[in-house]
Amino acid sequence: MTTIIFPSETAHSAAHSEYSGWERYVLMRAYPTSIVLDLAAMVWSVYFLLEHNWQAAIGIVLVERLLSFSLLYRVNVKAMGETTLGRLALLHLHPINLLLQTVGLGIGVWGLWVQSAVYILVGVTLVIVGHAFGWSRVHPKLTLIHRP
Image (cartoon, rainbow, N blue to C red):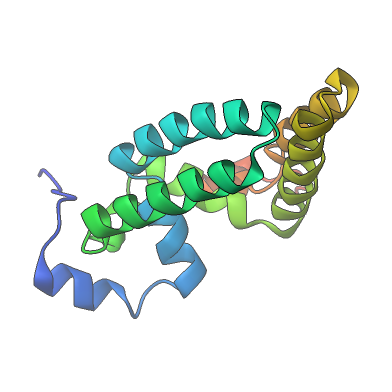
């Protein structure tokens, strides 16, 4: 049986009750179109931060998010949540994962602004380490602490 993840009006409304707002947002961001747009925006944002043009960096991110949302606001998040990619996206909502990635992003952006390789590396490292938490959302056997 094939699951189609493309938008559908009935699937969109039914999926709202199963996932929280943050989960729906993360699942929409995990859609391949959104990932591609995020990567393109990230490249330009890094450039503008290195040039000390924070207005353009923020503008790029806002325009990209609006474009992505307008293309994907009717994605069937229930079907997306059942895919491996969707489950991988949900691991980002683990509290430690979210904390480390948010702090890492802040430090990394600051590092780009002041053009400090150490701050950039610390930021990227925290983002990567954050991904160590939340894997039980992908599969229950991937939990860090196994209880008897």
